[in-house]
Length: 142
Image (cartoon, rainbow, N blue to C red; front, top):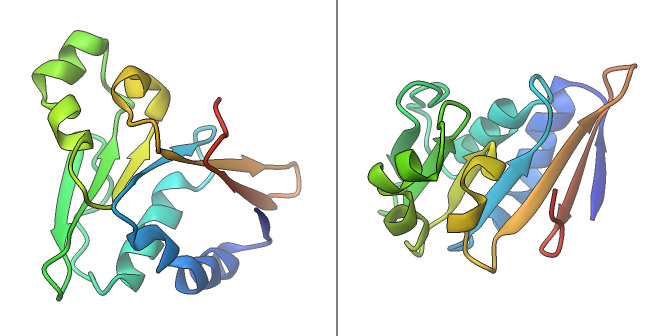
């Protein structure tokens, strides 16, 4: 599936329309350049799950954990600062990624060896006119 997003409002609308899809107990690997909107779209999806007390981007904490009103644990990972597999392992990525919860991952290529085989890849692109496209495919690999 490919969706075109013309502005920030479109990102909000996308999250509202597809948030149920993202409630699956899977890892969602968001792949895209710096500034492509990974954090924004993940936060919009999480808001649509009923979580409004967002902690911001987990750039420094690496993992933000949330709980919905229905007691569903949701995780947002930003792996940008991870240096290698050993650091990811020491932080418990392998164990975290095996949980049966929605897990949203920025910079998934940093922990690709730990990702489950059923990870859903979400590719974000941005063109010269600042129009974004989101491509969602189970079989997508960067």
